[in-house]
Length: 220
Image 1 (tube, rainbow, N blue to C red):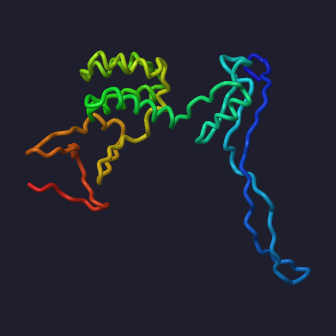
Image 2 (image 1 turned 180 degrees about the vertical axis):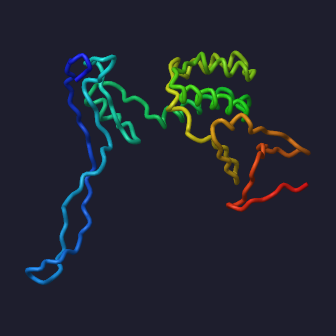
Image 3 (image 1 turned 30 degrees about the horizontal axis):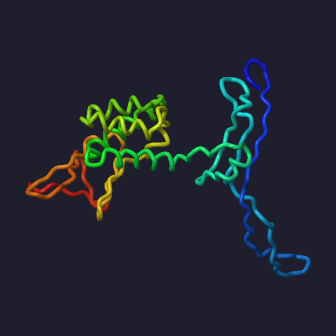
């Protein structure tokens, strides 16, 4: 029921996996012996489900349903129930978005550009702001990305984007043998340099430094 007294009618359908409960030993005092017992099958957390109709702007929207899934989108179920293509999951959206950036920008998709894009989208997520391709193109323009590549991206990236589905909680950089993980606000501080013909990733070292939990000092 809403604040104005109106009632919202809906139904929820969920599909939950079932697993067999673990067998237990219990003491039966009347027989003076232990017996094997089981509670039977146990219902697990939902793996997918939907609510119809969706609740939008204070009222029921009979043209929309709220769909929930854990990992896979289960296209065949969505097609069978609603007759439409299944929406992409958050992981699929993130993989497709960053894959498009790499495929189109190629050599222009540098660590600095990736950090700028990540930070811009993360800030929108944290501030619960809308994020569009125009916001992305503004970032790419500041990174001096050629106009023709930005236009190619416009052809493969939607105008309206969902920030929370495009960035991770931590900013992570991987090489063949090293992993660097830091807080999102530090992403723009990490730089690349070529020194004596060798490429390096530079991380500002401020304050306390520890190695495997033990404090260490810089060499003079």
